[in-house]
Length: 421
Image 1 (cartoon, rainbow, N blue to C red):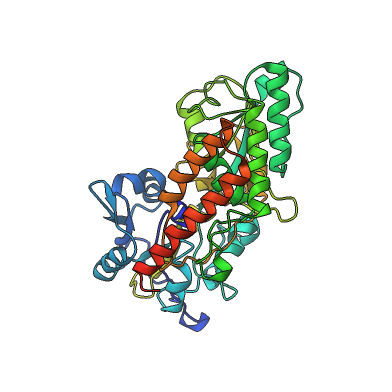
Image 2 (cartoon, helix red, strand yellow; image 1 turned 90 degrees about the vertical axis):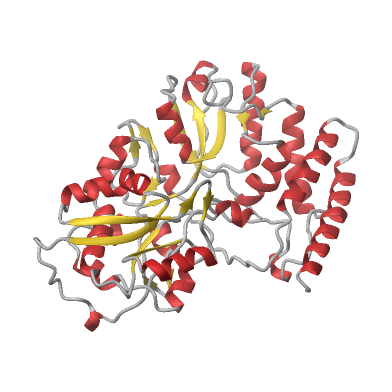
């Protein structure tokens, strides 16, 4: 399911009353070792650890690796490792956060935030801050977040005298602009890194918070054969017939396509590939009736374990990675290895590319039902083949949606039956 595509990190946290807030008694000279779960020590140090220990040399951070070979621990296996190692810093994602709070694993951070001189909540992106609140309180903070953006090649737009994209464009407007670019420049206006079925079923549908399993009815019904889905596939079909879209990998980075919608990891590719053309970025395309971010948002939420004996040192780490000093260094590096900085002090890349559009949309807080069957592999395979036949003109769109509805529903029914439900 699309929720699993978004799932990036995991972990923990707990609440404590103001009167229970630990006195800042850890002496500046006392050596402390904090434990945290992450992919590896090197990966953590590159993102956060090296900068933190340079400022606080007496506080070391030991990473308990969650990557075993090529596989990642998550779910019950990750929880077992947490229970065994008892990390001081718990890292939650949007699906584990509420559970961690409910189980009393996380310290309430608001008393710490109120006393901090390094960070102010007003300086952090409010969409992300609000997405992390549980019952109105903050038990975690995330120094970075994921967003999707409409990236565009300013050099090409200037060359053909076409107006730049805008924030919060609809997908219909983006497809129209892509077709205009194809007409004037002779090359595709839009690039997507997967097949056109996925563009419709995941990228565009995500902007509408639309899923092919009806979550409001327990995830037991397929919804492909509806007017909402037909309008999305029809939009992609019309743009494809005008040759306004390419699925060639990295066509945007090569300067062969004028626009692409991708997450903010593309910024790192732009730096590493030493792209020569001028580029800009706007917010991802939206449903005009309800603009949302289809990206995961905060996915690495740091909190303090209620079992930690070094709560003050753990807070120093959280405070530091949300500070303006850390953010300036993170932005100066330019790789954005963990996404966009939540601190809004620095919304420019390389002192010239305006990133403010990436901060505009709020992510949707989603409930993840681990019991719901995942038939995404089946849907992607069947859907891609079916939509290809529509693109070739050997099947109508109505016929494709009716057939895919029937096949996906049958697959979903069998998956539920295996679960005994």
